Length: 367
Image (cartoon, rainbow, N blue to C red; front, top):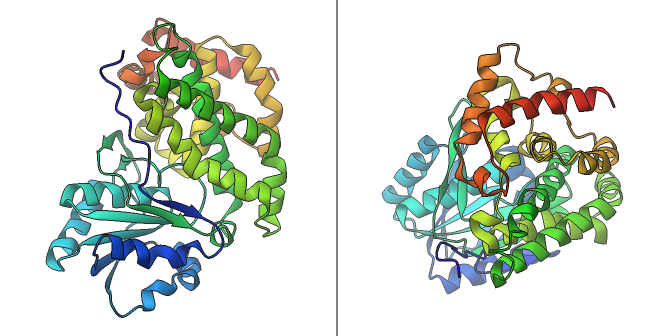
C-alpha cells in the first residue's frame, strides 16, 4: 500500500446549474458566517454581479477587495490584512483561476473558511487545494503552495460561465486533457495498478479526455453563440470540477507531470510567455512530454485536434524558442528538479529533456 498518498477530493459542497448561486446564503448560514470578504476582479465581477443577489442580504456584513490580477504572496498578505482588520470569518472569491488560487491560499494562511464562484472555465483551480504562485509582474515563482484546507463551496451558474472569453475555455480544455496524458504512464506502473484511489483517478482522467476529444467543437461553437447547451455545460464542468477530482483522488501520481513542469519553466524563464494562457502553455507541454516519452504516434493523433482548437504545438509556433541556449538549459534544469517529473517510468535526464525540445521542434516543422 502507499504511505504517501494524500486524498483531498474537493470542495465540501458543489453546485452548477442556472440559479445555483442563490444557494450561497445557506452555506454561509451553515458556517455561521457574518463578516464576509468578497475578493473580486474587475471585468469578471461586473459580469457576475447580476447573479449575486445574496450581496443584498442585510444579515451579512460584506467587505470587498479587488485583487491585482496575480496569485502572489503580496496579494495573500493584503487579504490577510483585510481579514484581520475587519474580523472576517468567511471569504468568497468571484473570478477566474488565479483569483481562486489566491483566495484558497490566503484563507489557509489566516485560518478562515472560503468559497468560490468561478466566472469562467479555464482550469481546475477553483476545485483544488493548491495555489500556483506568481510575482506581481506576472513571472512565475516556479512553485505551488499546497494546503489541507478545501473550499467550503464551489457554486456557479452556466449562464455566467458561458459569457466569458472563448479562448479561456479553449485553454481550459487543453489544460484538462493534459490530466490523462500526464498521469496515464505513471498510473500504469505495476506497483500502482491496484490502488483504489489511483484507479478512480485514472478512470476520471480518461473520462475527461474522451469527452473533450468528442465534444469540444460543439461546445466551443455553442459558447461562441452564447448558448449554455448540454455540451457546453458538460465540458465546462469537466474543466473546472471533474479535472480537479483527478488530482484530488490521485494526489501527486495523477496531478501533473512534465507538461505542467514545462509550463512553469516557460513562465519562470521566458517573460514573453506571459502573453499565453495557462492552458495554452500546458498544451505545448503535452506535446513536449510525449516527445520526451518518444510517443510520436500520440502526437500525430492529437495534431488534428490541436489544429481545430488552434492550440500551440511548438516553441517556434509560439515565437518563444530561445536563441540563447543557456535559457533552454535553465528551463530543462528546472523541469528536471521537479519530483513529479521523475514519477514517470522512464529515466529522466537533463540531456533527454533538452534534446526532446529540439526533436519536437523538428517534428512539428515537418508537418
